[in-house]
Image (cartoon, rainbow, N blue to C red):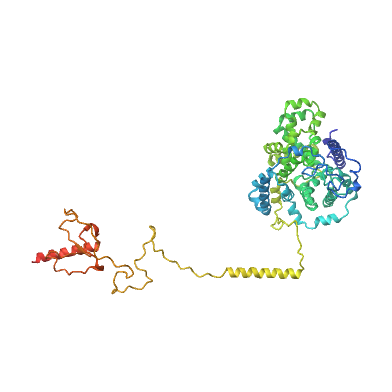
Length: 581
């Protein structure tokens, strides 16, 4: 009888299904440990003595310096494909991404509301390792949950818990990433924090209890954040991202298996026909993928990139990764010819080729899969309707699933105080309180005095006019209005200037008269025509101003409008006299 036919009609059947799946996962874990042990050099019994190890550091646990630890904390090459599949980001690019993420985390609500597409793009590029734990907490909503339930984790941690649940948790602690330096020793701080988180969840949700697949989820969170933050991250994943996955009966994971099976028909029809031909139920190969969020399937570099996208966009990323692996392993005729039965197909899906799990390749393929949250939800309604028709109502009514960080924030709007970042390092002052208060008062007084001094009014600046006019400037008055009026009795010549030569040398005239030197034109003396005729003799003689000489050359003099008007006036008066005579 298939596993899917065993589960669901009653509570006893649900418990039986849960036990069977846990046995399958335990066998897979034991097989993975044996495979990992082959890739690691033999460790002597003294090195593996649990009682001798006091911490999670490799040296404290008996591992000497010749044991290689990768940048993720795995000892002895347990993650043999992580180093090959990891994409090294240049330090300059990493620093720029850190600055951008710090800005986003400082204004998280604004970025999620107004620029969510940019947040999604930066999650797809990869969160900087130094900020990954903080970013995961913000994306999942664990930060808001922790602020709204201050002291809750300490309260749960101080309680005893159910002895049966605690016994099962104790047996599972050494199975979670046994070759990571944080969990390598029994009694180290890694396993202690893992026990605290899992025990607190069983007290927080006693009706759901503990499920074996929750341990790797909590362990991944603990690698990036403290125990309290990891607890609230686990709560959000179990309640918002994967609701019902860890409940009795495991009905939610079976329903999502049917959704994955239906989506496979759309993405890779050849894979769907092969699975249908050999009657391979999706629960047989996708249980560990989905319940552990690929944390025990992919290389660690790819796990981190998948989790970055998963916590931002929700469960559709998990579906996309599963579809990519199925298409890559069963999507061609050549691969299908190698697996002619159910057993061969299951063995092929348990040993996925490393090239398909490589970080860059996997992320590109996941982003290209045309599956959205709307597709997942529409197929969920179809499969739920079919489930109710064939098996009746679900025994476990899980809360609605939230597709990503934006949906979680919309369902539980946070306050500005909930998103405020608390300092991780607090330095206490060595000075006593009274001296510290005096120093603060002095600092405030100094700031006030500086502000008062800076606010003194400066005298207004008097503008001095420019004596040299530019072409675009307005014309200045001939006389400065600020200076006193000039005495009319004073001479027009400036006394400071040197005396002018009374007899300047004039150019010699041409003996032959020209048009400009015609005899009809009268010579001028200080802009006044000379009385060389009888009709002009009655006009008064005007003295020469500033002892200026008489110029006969009209080319050297320019007549002003006043001079021309005087000439015309004198000529009209003379004509009147002639007419009268």
